[in-house]
Length: 151
Image 1 (cartoon, one colour):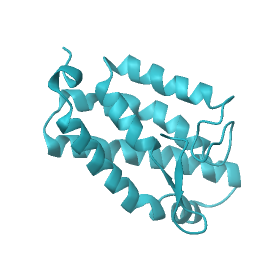
Image 2 (cartoon, one colour):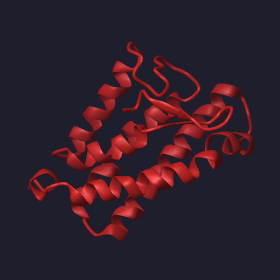
Image 3 (cartoon, rainbow, N blue to C red):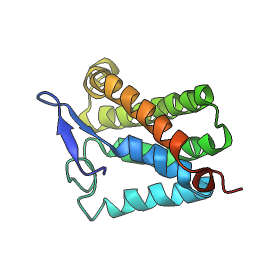
Image 4 (cartoon, rainbow, N blue to C red):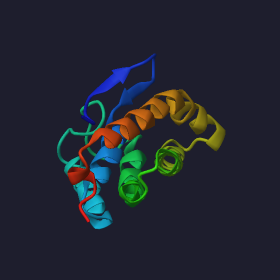
């Protein structure tokens, strides 16, 4: 799902990578499994065109893929807090970590200042990621308990 992106304007392309990371981590057996799954995604994308827009290798948005690995344990803990408000807090917190790491990577990669990178890499995506968080929580809430609570 992460490969496909939908263009919204000249430079804005929205993918389902973040949505899938949240859902996969919700279904995983443990935080280590989340790290392994996200790490495999990162590693495979170095050789296969599986990143957003059918891209591969290190690019401008590679920091976001690194962030998926870093934040996957946060999303895993959605298993431990089934209340919707706490899940929303965990998703928003994880998304902020993804934005932080991804934006810092873009600043480094393009040698640009923080304000410019925030306007390019965060602000246009806020509404879309809000929708993804609502979708992820909705999907997670309807998953059978046997899938999401394996303890």
